[in-house]
Amino acid sequence: MKLRLHFVVDPMGWLCVSMVFGIWLYNTLFIPKLVLLPHYNEGHIPWAIVVCYYIASGLCIAALFRASTADPGRLPVDPQIPHSEREHWELCNKCNLMRPKRSHHCSRCGHCVRKMDHHCPWINNCVGEDNHWLFLQLCFYAQVLSLFTLVLDFCQYYYFQPLTGLDQEKFTTHHELALLRVSALMGLVMFAGMTSLFYTQMTGILSDTTTIEKMAQFSNEIFGSKKSWQWALAEVCGTRWKLLWLIPLRSRQPIQASHHFRTHV
Image (cartoon, rainbow, N blue to C red; front, side, top):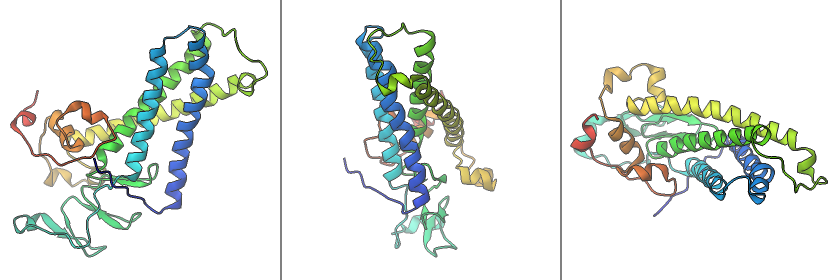
């Protein structure tokens, strides 16, 4: 498996990624320390809940890293255009390079990206043909982790049994309420934002329309093809194996259409 790293030099983007990483780090450190591990040690919750939280946290940070560092589909300076596909290419009026139709020039990154959806400052990268599946994974796992965090914060005060082995001199014990309120607030904001973003991304994928095309309001004139949800997601994720749609640590390869996936079920 060969994973090429792609970095965008943008201080504002680095700041946004650092904020997202900080939210992840805060909840990954304090939620287990305040809720999961103490209640597990006293036998209030099973080990499976602790493992599931760490798995969700690991997949979330892996998706963030991959979405931030994966090549979104940057076009080479001198692309080799097959003669049979020349009619599907056009000249970019900003960088004066040939590009496939549905590509877009990102003014933030300074180059054209194949099937660009948008430039996301929170990952400091464009969302394009080659990393759209990773951005979708990030939205999904951020929802899962945020919801998990909110449920644990709620259960800490309204469901779990009181802890008996707390060290009253610890910083976390003295400031437990404040720390959990901050965690709940971040979890609520992240869950609401990621749910909305995940919904808009899924509707765009299923309708084969990028965010840029929606804003330009010309997609229906050119790209109005109907696809089944299976084929649409397989095309974005680069594999027909549904389990692999959830794994960020792999490479993506374009796939060809098949009759099975074109059929609506």
